[in-house]
Length: 509
Image (cartoon, rainbow, N blue to C red):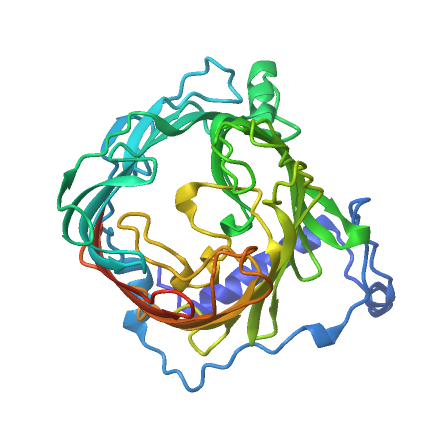
């Protein structure tokens, strides 16, 4: 048999197909049938009852991007798939049970709590070790110091949503760190500060997941909660940054199309011991009850909160109400802005005692969006405080209410690095700076800040106006070691000036 060419084989196949169609008796479509099919209205597609059809608007579509000025490089396209490699990451100090973020198949998980809530049995110990040398002049005294701080997180993961967590700081106690003072206006020598108490110890989970496991049905709701010595942080720590004995429960993933709310979470919380607040002396003298809402709406997000501080101490009734509200939004490609307000009302100490929580403060945070929006960030923040506004709860080592306003109001939490007055009591001012992250491998922050005072000097902690400049530089030298350098200088009316220079090594594990 002679070999057929390609065109001959194609013609043969077409002939066989035509013969098959003829044998089926299927009539060919006429021109009228084709025209009628083209004019027939398309069937309405089935859609969900919750969905709505919207009119077509071609103005919301943009043309495809043009790459005429970017020549095609085949090797770079291949590298997307073939040039991948493993980055070196720091493993936890201790890993028992299921390892953290490992590759490869996992062993089958136990089902003691139900097939819908699998057991992981994972124990991790991790944290960081910070050591710094500093020369600090806080106006009252000068000190040359080497200090260290160890942060230990102990995490026992039971399921994907349930865990027991503890946080320890064994080398500092009551704001005093293990240190060696070798100069200045203090006695030279070594001080070992040991603390075996937990700074946080709590259980957290999700009642929805727990119920789903016990009932062997997929959970239809989420209700996360925590109980114990729980750390809470709201509004980036401006309103609450403290760990106290109590509980918190959240209602999540709410929405309201009529109010233009795409997502809303509401958290209820209460603290009965170790509540730290500038309004009540000590950390065993107050209860706190509150509710806070996180709302995505108006092309930004809102944070609204209310708290009541109940004074149980013997120093007078300092109970009061605390309200807060903030709104954060990005405006075009120019500005990212947050506006925060904290209001304290209702405190009536009686017996001629002074109020410790009254008035309000307005905080405004701004950052400009540059051509390098992730690495070059100019910022300018300002505030105005009236009387003695307080955060609802704030750990003694967390700094003042102006902590996030700028680096000149933030201490280092190790050596006692000096700061400008961060209370916000009858003061106003601004911090202007530049945050540059290079290629996301280093950071430098340059800042200048000014603070003005108002009212009587008996109602505020800053005796007079202040002006300061500061710089921070951070440089990672390995995947787990960071070097940091800080320097600040502040000039104060009616008080001694401030000076701080420090160098820190931070090792993560």
